[in-house]
Length: 207
Image (cartoon, rainbow, N blue to C red; front, side, top):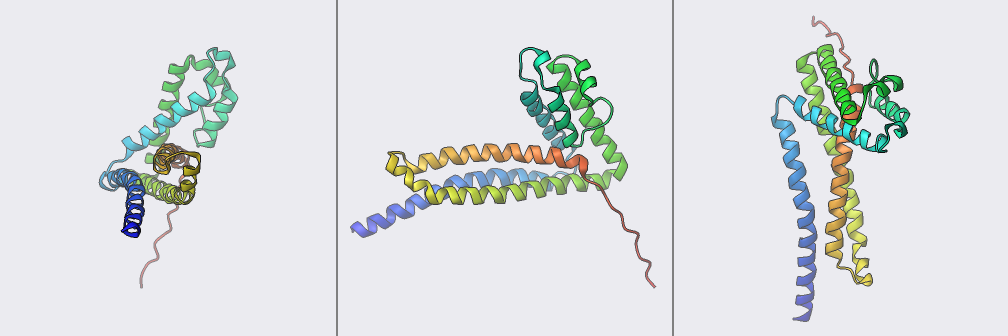
């Protein structure tokens, strides 16, 4: 009876850990299905870019006094994500104004860049590019996330020696990791989408 009770507790614990992962899996798969179902992903891409702009401003323009903003770092970050050209130099950004004006300015530049890329490769090809970038980013980072969760799960039982409930600790850290993967998906899409190029190979005529 004691052995069966012990084995039942082990199985119950495994199910509880699996349930934490399954809830995250359901959420990420729901987002992935949206990408597969939606024909026009421009709104999704724009949302990621808007959030990335907010994240950059939160990193480089946090000081209360604008003179203390790290505009050099912001310029470098914008160029790294492929947002280059008129309106993105350090001097031009200084002239824009406050944080809200700067956010609006960068969003307009990002929207214009997306329209430029779409016109460059064609609306149909661009729609496919957006879908591929989103799917590959989500899939690659989700696999990394599962690997991290698996590694953490193997060692989480040791928390019991510190009078901590391993399951509660796993839930907290899994939630934190999921928040990180959401930020990484946004960041990777934003830093990839402008740098994608299409190479068209001429079709070989058949005899």
